[in-house]
Image 1 (cartoon, rainbow, N blue to C red):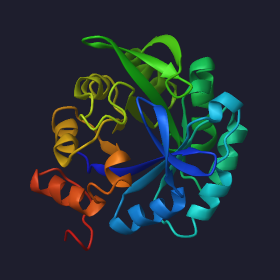
Image 2: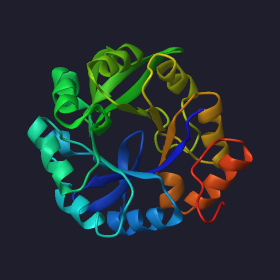
Image 3: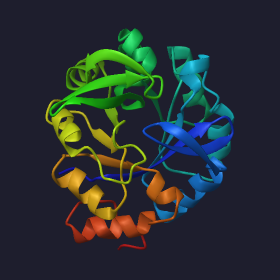
Length: 257
């Protein structure tokens, strides 16, 4: 098993860090970079910033936030929302992002995945997939922060994205997002078994046990968490220790060494 990464996810609307349930009912949490710095200091392996309304307005507004974050945060950052072109990706990478996440524009024009991967390397191209269950073992890919149906099967789309050059998949369960009921392990397992690239499980983490389950039973390479961190129900350090106790390989930090 590869070293499992513990990733703090920050969903952004305008200048604010927000949190919703099923990608709806958004509540303002606070300043995203104050939280980002705290998660970095706690030992997060990476950060994910998502501009959750960017695709509605055809633009990403995170450049300034990312530039500010790089002054205090020195771990890889993935930035997504409203990335429609190679030029959009270039601007975010130039502002300090290490990777860009693309969803809506990739569904509309799949060759964008290849274009970004060729220009910046597959490691910089993250395919963001929002999956909603349609039957016990089938999920549909949604876009526009869970608002628009695509008719695409999540597993088939994940496989195509990997073939086109995506280096990683950020897989969010719309059904579980914000519920604290645990990840959709069956969804994660279906995708991890279909692709050879890393899969980040996102949506639903409420306890350390949920992290352990999605890694051990779902095969997740990384776990993205928001609610559990934002509401201080657990720290990255505590989650890392829980992973170690469950024999999950994670990066050692001074607090866990």
